[in-house]
Image (cartoon, rainbow, N blue to C red; front, side):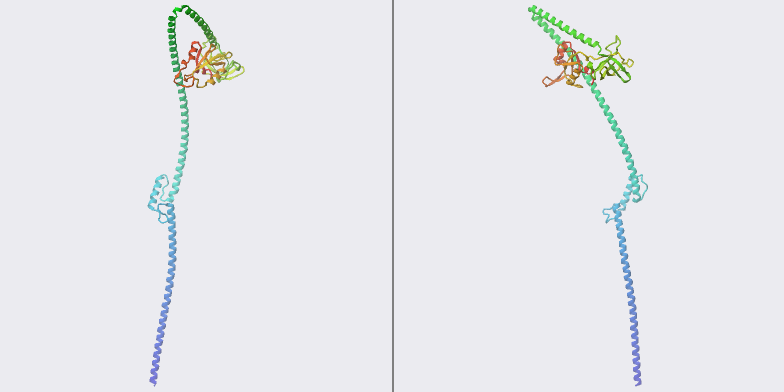
Length: 423
């Protein structure tokens, strides 16, 4: 029994021991499992922490990368050298090549290796060039002004030269025309005389049977010739008397001012612009030699002021008592003139008529016994009806010219008239 009980007890103790071992084993296993579980949980926490740190580092790195990309894009926008600065960075080789070209374009800029250093140096060089260009532009403007002034002076001188040449050409043309006119007049006179001689011869032959009538005709012609001769003699004496008699004299002279005073006034029918020849007032002096000319510049109530010019000899100046002459001037009497030819130039026909009226010369429409002068102009280009002529008609071919010449009337070209009246 005891053995059985003892075996039972031993068996129960062995089973208890086994249970305890299992409990311990399970406890150890549980402890080991708990330890491994705790260790696993700590590693997971560490892993999660590392993951969070890595995510934060990635986000920060991506932010820095984005900032770098934005900064790079902004620099590319400013710098250029890229087709699309938002996506493609600047091309370094192109930028370096452009920097080299910039340095070549501004050789006087400071030594540089970057655009940051190149920009202020280029600005400095550019401003220096702008200042240099401004100085050059100012110099160009000054030179342009000088060139314009010289061109203006040259143009004025050229105009004066052309005007002088034109005047000389006109004077030469007038002289040639006058010579041709004189030759033509002489030839015409010779032809006319020849024709008259032939007519007289024919007339004598035809009228031989009527001697008595011819004699009466000759006697009548002689009487007319005597009358005409007497008339021409009186006219010539009148012209000679006027030419030898002075129109006035110099009353006072202010040589330093080139002016003087004459003893003619407004009551002598004197007008401004009238020109006189000044000759010596000494007895026996040659009246054809002029000492100077005097142009009336102010007509007074008692004396008139004149400008003295064209002095022939400065050692023989104009003095008080010298005589003055103007072949067309008449202070008291009335004289008559007829205009022939084309009147142009300084005066038209109406102005010339008014000028002559002021100095006591009456303009007549045709030649008469009272005509003193025939004043001739240029050739006519139209006939009496205003129709254009095929060839200009010289004034010497006009009937009025032949009538004046036949009657011994003084013929004066218009240019000779105007030299005694300047307005």
